Amino acid sequence: METLQKNGHTTYLVGGCVRDLLVGLKPKDFDISTTARPRQVKRLIKNSFIIGRRFRLVLAKKGEEQYEISTFRRGQSPGENTEDLPDGDNIFGSPEEDANRRDYTCNALFYDPIKKEVIDHTSGVRDLEDGWIRMIGDPNIRLKEDSIRILRALRFSKKLNIQIEPELKEALCTYADELKFSALPRRREEYLKLMRLKDPSTAFTELYDLSILEKILPTLHDFLENKETLHHFNKNLREHSQDLRRAQDPSHLFGILLWSIYYTANHEIDIDDQMNWIKSDEVQTFAKHELGVFNTELTNIEQAFRLIPQLLDFPSLERKSLRRQVGLLAQKAFPLALLLYSQIETTYLDEWIELFEHLKPQFKDFDKKEALRD
Image (cartoon, rainbow, N blue to C red):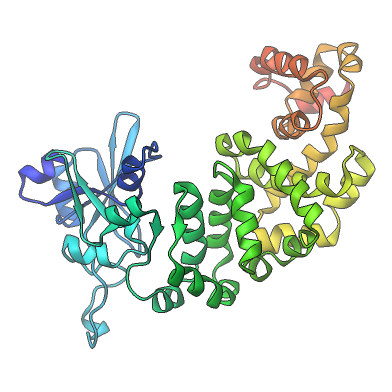
């Protein structure tokens, strides 16, 4: 950032990292915006690369860290001839224009770490201090532009522990139907982020209360219509909250969600019942077409469901050969199975974890086909 500024380019930290720093959260990454065009950034910053087809930006690497550097952009002006505009989302503008094209005021903040100065064009600081998630512009227009903003508003509200501004909340309900027409991969990414919240159960409960859940996850909505079921589901999800926040593998996040649904309905471990449930047409359709779970992820989840009952009998594993032990623990689905097991049973849990860490160095060279022949 100092290099770009010294070469005459206004350059700030932008968006979520500034918001999180202001409320005392640790940002997961740091994004940078500048008046410099992508090619100018590439010339000035060593070890940087222009990426993106529609949205051109620069990826700069420094040691183990990497940073996305974008050029400030603006929205299309009324009456502007699209034929005269560059391809994609590359209409460059000023910092103020860039701020006003973002979705919520809390996401439109800039920070200059050289001058140690917050730049706020949309009253985002005041909204954070007052405890509001507020849309930049008319919510009725901005939500029609991109209905995924509905899920983002709810996620930011829960993450920052602040309220959704009343006019915006009304618009969320009004345009909830539009979410059905949004791209499933984009909804999937929001579901994964919702599940990484400190308490994801509050997000799903509000989605239910606002009648948004029935539009996007109708199977889960129908399942939660009973108040007692909703209570037990939330309890199961809360017990996994630390695991969800740490999880990097999407199959672990979706696996915890599916197991929370199954265990809420059944309250027991039964391999036949578990496998019949996870392989049923209803659950497969829910996972693939409502949640957006990939086939490979669902296979991993199914294998974890199959392994859980075996974790109840640690003594029998101790009597098996070393190769048999490694054969069980080296399975890709074992960490997820252990994660799910840990929330319903603590017997032998320490022993499983200790054995897993002890045998882990042998997983790399393990020949599964040979173990099966044994």
